[in-house]
Length: 228
Image (tube, rainbow, N blue to C red; front, side, top):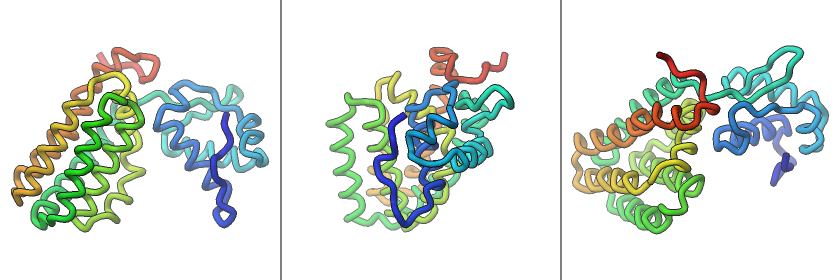
């Protein structure tokens, strides 16, 4: 395991470890089913085993790892119910964000969003983490345009399970349609059409659920068993 790229001297090392392991799990750098060695992680991060043990407990509470007594700690497979719950929360929040952004229809923010769409179109073929990061920036900017940056920060831990699927689907499926969906959102915001902005966001975010069973069937090793 790679060592932390940056360790902030003023920040607790345990918190940084938790954040880094969480990011690796969500992005798929630590795939579902991976066994996590307390000793190896402690060595890689240059710390004692105690903060690693505490990190495992925290991540287990977030349902990202499973601690199996006498057998080890493993990255959880993706649970479809958790993804659906995560998507529900995000859609509810972002629907209102879109309405507020359309109500403001600020030309400066709209130009920023349009510039991001141009970058997305240029990089869509790169797929994977590159596009997910651009998508994340787009939604963060939309929240800022609605003067709800604090809300966006608040929902980050609530959408982790949905994000795990987003990284998987970005590797497995074409992404051009996501740029078109983003364009529909921006067009509605620019027009000051609150209803259309909300509807466009809902269509966009429900796409994860549309792809969910398909990707789960393609990558069964990454998911808890599908219900009959």
